[in-house]
Length: 176
Ligand code: IMP
Ligand code: MG
Image (cartoon, rainbow, N blue to C red; front, side, top):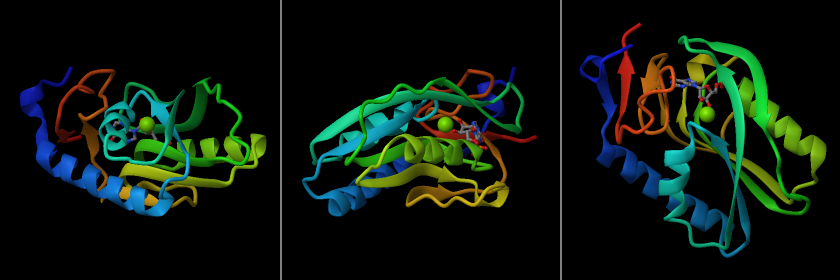
């Protein structure tokens, strides 16, 4: 177990909130008053979804799915496990996937392929708070992202280490 005092600060709460507000503004400009379906990938994206959605002005639906790829170590397994992927009819809808972080890209690709395979959406875009571009194993680029980051293992603001630290209002990292 890592102690909170061992965490190094990467983005404080104010920095995150400013970025989230900016992303909200971008999304308001993009979608105008069209209905938007947000797909929140639990559990990591929950903080981001909650804060981001407060800035959005269009009629909004929120859907929650659960995917998992990480074990209790620091590396992505590459295999995506669909714990709960029940979704409403997304045919002809504007769909925006909300993620905390894109790392290898396997999770993002799995979900995009799943939605494309099952629905003919009006639009399908991807918004991730964090982008670890350097770790990418599959070709995937978020339409919107908050911060590009190095290869660090991050915790806080939804991100966990072994299930802990999702509640931190800031994003920190552990030296590995
Ligand atoms: P990917 O499939 O490798 O892109 O990993 C995506 C998922 O792994 C994210 O949605 C996170 O839940 C988790 N993840 C990736 N990097 C980190 C990290 O630095 N800290 C905590 N979770 C992470
Ligand atoms: Mg996630």
